[in-house]
Image (cartoon, rainbow, N blue to C red):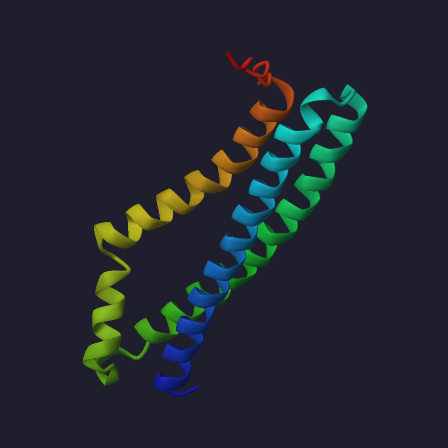
Length: 136
């Protein structure tokens, strides 16, 4: 593969990971809406079934994100193996991926992957919808 092909692969992986993360957020917000409107009053069996179905979808997207992350890691390795032949753009990308910005972004993405299902589980099994306020 040429350097341009590898750079394009890297950009495609970033775009795919962003799209998959957006889908995770979307299914989580759909679950939050379902909890607010009807699952908070549902029996425990329905809550557990709903959460399991949510987790299957969630893990499907996480698996696809891991697949893309592995491709991205191999693309970065291929760029690093170019050595002195690498363009300034490639060298800049490699330096960026070693910087605090990339490491912080990776930590936040991983933290989000833990927070989304944890918050959903909290809302589904612990949180109680407050009674409707009475108008004066």
